[in-house]
Length: 387
Image (cartoon, rainbow, N blue to C red; front, side, top):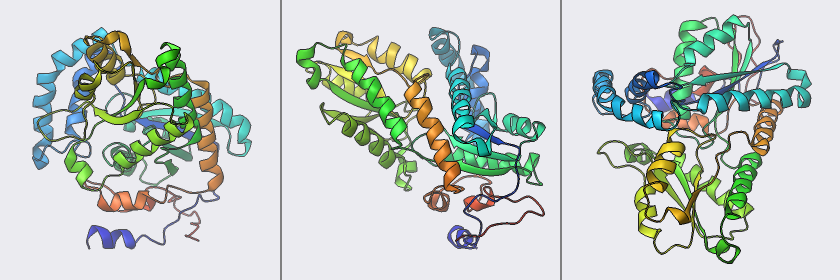
């Protein structure tokens, strides 16, 4: 049975949350993560390059061996980067803070599914997916929301995190005691858009009023290999949707473009490349604001790649600024809570797009349809079928 016919075979699986009684709701923030300390860099790089969902090195089962070689070669340089930004990535700190604050709001807005318990699960850094899953089991959690912190869906990012959750669930929770649902994309959610627009407005105030409307706004997202994009990945369309929605909130008062950063290796990646594009326009521009549109907090790509490398080394650094990351933005955190509340109230297990993402996705040991992971699979529970 091929992937398409297999996915159709699951069309009768539940698409709404079951009525099994639960002891609250775990809200699990899922992201790629980053090494919190310098000694964690090698493990982070190895797991990243070993993930065929994120970067397919084209060597099949030998990818893990090649990943060890690449990680060993790159670790000394990347360690220097993390030392330069304070000795580690702040993404865990901000993820914990955002999750905790959002859950406090949810306890007030959604008392029927309280208490809402915050967790963080990273794909390539601690706490790893399996560590967080084991913590959920130890805490006797029976209902959890896998909340992707990649606002724009890609099979390489959100898809990889969900695939890992599927693999670890089979190992650690074979009886399916946890009923999962997921927020797998949210590129134009009002809370996200308003938070970005607010930070951009504040950054624009740092430019002289007479040139403010001429400042170019560059939305910089993490790039992906073109073979991923050519496979039909949703990512570039959703990044563009976020950027357009932010500009609409700003009344299109400034010229803007969407560009991409963090390319690795010789393969073609999605562009235009952030560093090259800025170099191309910086001299004639009166001002430039770089907006990390695909990131929900600061990490190596903002603090080093943009702040130190791109802006710090530019001959025109006086006219280039980076928009503040979302980090502790109250607008953003309230938006996160509202997004989770809307998800709970909708009763849906996943977006209408996710089954299609699974159809065209590629990877190792993955499910064919999201209903295999999401929904109530606990033995003896009643399953509510698709309407």
